[in-house]
Amino acid sequence: MHRPWIIAGLAVLICCAAAHAADTPSRFVADTAAEALGIWRDEAASLALRRQRARALIERRFDVPKIADEVLGPAARSASVRERFAFAAALVDDLVATYMRRRDDRAPPGFQVIEERLENRRTAVVSSWGWRAEDGATVVIDWRLSSGAAGWRVADLIIAGISAVQTKRGEVARLLAEHGGDLAAVTQTLRAHAAAE
Image (tube, rainbow, N blue to C red; front, side):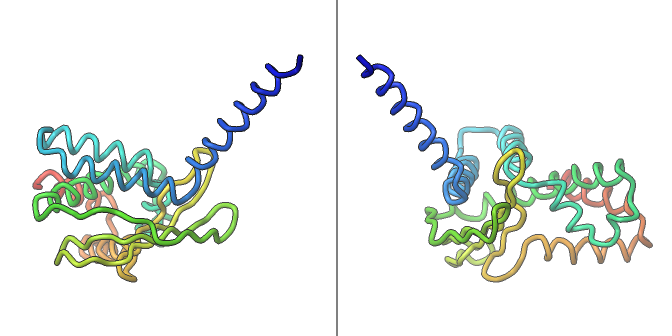
């Protein structure tokens, strides 16, 4: 008599378990990497379409506001909301241009998650085998993730022990020094770099 309710309850539990598995840090990283590699390897799509897809990937799966503020460093505290927003958009343009430029160097190999470490309820690190565009070497990539209302997001990529966010922060600090601390000029420089690619 109660069998339909039991079956329905089991179905709900199975669906919830599947959704939970899809939300794990490792699954998030694997899905992100698969989407990125799909964009990279899509020879049939135009460059404009690949860039559009890469931008959508970054905006959807990376914590862009947090990354932009981290890259700006102390300059973020004195910047207006509009300046920070414009810088974040230019940073995404720069990342997309860099990503698409490296696409043509050599085809990346496969992807494999090695380890997942939950630091607390809101941060995790997923380690994977990855590929370094500069020399094609296989290296360990640590995906530093942060969790919020929208779920897991990439906060940094640490490639062979080198933080991508801190590397970009150093580049932006040099640009700020060259432009006398003018954030608008730095933002325009990033836009010009992206447009030139």
